[in-house]
Image 1: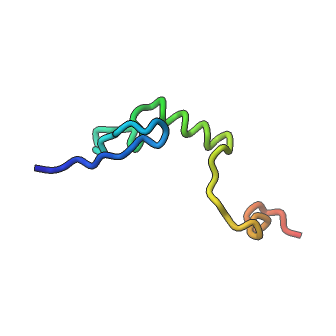
Image 2: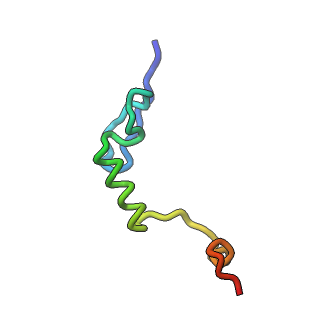
Length: 62
């Protein structure tokens, strides 16, 4: 008997089975996936970085 891993949807918190059949994992639905994607596109989410490296990665060196 295999126990299916359950995770929480990052958007709504609903319990989601982590299986190959769930094409939206870790999200519960396409709706939650698109809402999250939109938040990233609107820069509402970000990954912290090192401010002193911003110029290096943006190509704007003095």
